[in-house]
Image 1 (cartoon, helix red, strand yellow):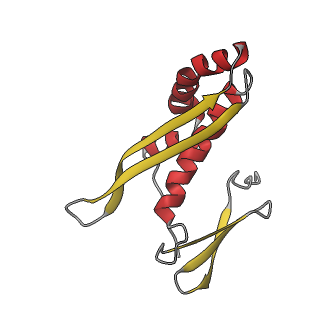
Image 2: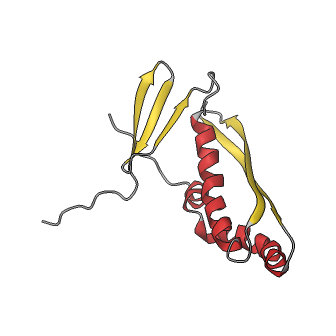
Image 3: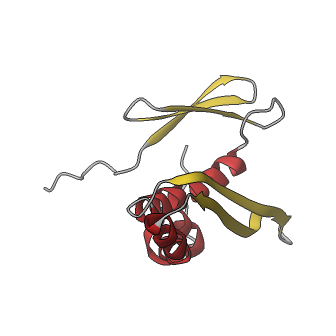
Length: 142
């Protein structure tokens, strides 16, 4: 009998108070989130942050080989909709990158590479956005 490997990604979510939760990974990282009414991140906002974060890491890795940005902001937006069965979901997801670089040959090369880095992240590199675009099924058990 072969032993089944542990899943690569593993997160637990613990309820800490009414409408408030903490997600923990195996490495000890924690993120607090909530229903969003207390100013905390709501789960959909965490999804948006995951998409922008994943692509930001890709873009950052590629462009900083040429030059360090003087500013780096990725903004992700989406709309909430419901289908005829009442299920809610997010549509029109858009990630916009706004990077600035100083002067010099390296900065010019980084600026020129930015559109290609964004394309590579979208088309191939970002596991999070690729998973969302693919529509991976989710199984829930109790």
